[in-house]
Image (cartoon, helix red, strand yellow):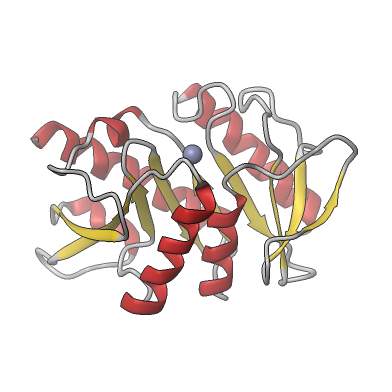
Length: 209
Ligand SMILES: [Zn+2]
């Protein structure tokens, strides 16, 4: 898939997620790795309304250190670019990362907030888990949950520490408390499938509390 087709596909998802109320106003950020240069990725520019996003509203960023590679005049990378950079650098086979702010992910509470580091929260072994490629009957799974620091690079550092210390999570997503999920996949289509499954899973969890 060439770059323009990838950016068109991500732009379509942005409009779809806006309609689903997952990306109100400028919330959320979507990215795709550049298949002609695996060492950079394209991410939604900061401050763009996700219901009106255009395929020119992306900037490219280095996977190695998160520095800006190229951008149309006036565009800045999303405020949460450092999180995408950590995910691409820790998982070389990942081709797309999607981050949204859904209502249910914001309703979920896990007791006393842990304001440093991370914690693993059990997730119910529902049928939808198969969308993550996990086929065990009644698997015992957890998801990594991170505190929502105002300073986003602090969240990115804690995510990096998780990957280095605990390894790649068994499920292809993480959650930032009171904020939203971030999913990844080898392709845009796979990341989208994971995001739909995560949305359903978090809805189930929010209603069981
Ligand atoms: Zn966010």
